[in-house]
Amino acid sequence: MFKRGDTFLMGPIDEYHLHVVVADPNSSGELVIAPITTLRPRTPDRLLILQPGDHPFVKHASAIACNFAQITTVSKLEELLASGRILPREAMEQSLVGRITAALIESDFTENGVKFFLKEGSRP
Image 1: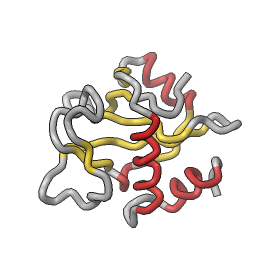
Image 2: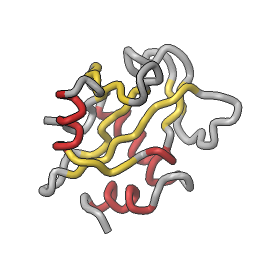
Image 3: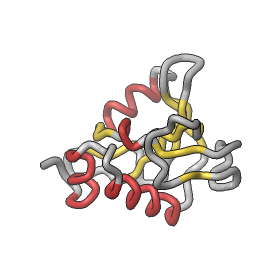
């Protein structure tokens, strides 16, 4: 079962990104995940910059890719896990997940449906 604070690597082979579960599953099994990417000069959203030590996988300055945060389902993530397309990593501290949630809600780059889910616990 996936829950708030869980992290995993996901993405095309050789381009895995760390993802964090930002919201616990609702009664429909839906939750929000957000990828973390290396901070680059062209990174559009800099509301929350992670530093080495914020999570064991973070080795250099990184940002939450708010524009790629998405609502998905536990069943979809479990399918990806079973197929080896998700690689579990260490859980993230809840205080940091709270800061990520706040950044996603504040960001102009986060899809409105994701913002609504984070505030209300369901899709609009």
